[in-house]
Length: 197
Image 1 (tube, rainbow, N blue to C red):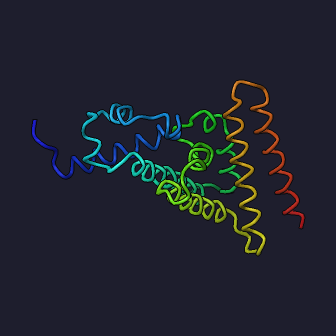
Image 2 (cartoon, rainbow, N blue to C red):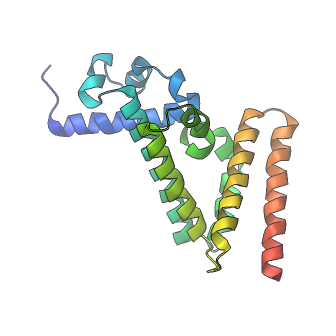
Image 3 (cartoon, one colour):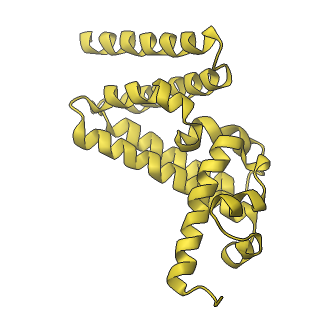
């Protein structure tokens, strides 16, 4: 069998980034081996280093890919939902999103992994860039133009991410649903307070 064309090589690279993005969110970066990645993408183990210099390089690219997907989802809410912010909150705290770790929010699934990397690592830089883009996207869903909006939006995002991460870690126990319900109620109460001000 001959060598892959440039187009095929690019397709394989994209397949690996996508597969890694899902596997890293689902299992954690340290719990996914290069052979696991290659098998998931349907490629042979030996081809990995033709595409990436290291697993760390792939982790950085996979992290960026995960955030790109999430930011595109925010843009879709902005384009199609009558109340984009509420549509995002409803989706983010939904059972399907909680259960679909591989395709879910990288904030909740990758922050622990990234926190254990070196401060100057490419994966951390990619994660920080993704957090900034995601935070900007969440802020844009309902920007009221006030100076306090950014801080409120970041606090809301932290509540959402914390609820999702804790509810995933406790899934199957009643506390898992309680966490989601508590944050939904807190955000609804906060929204009512903002409307009344």
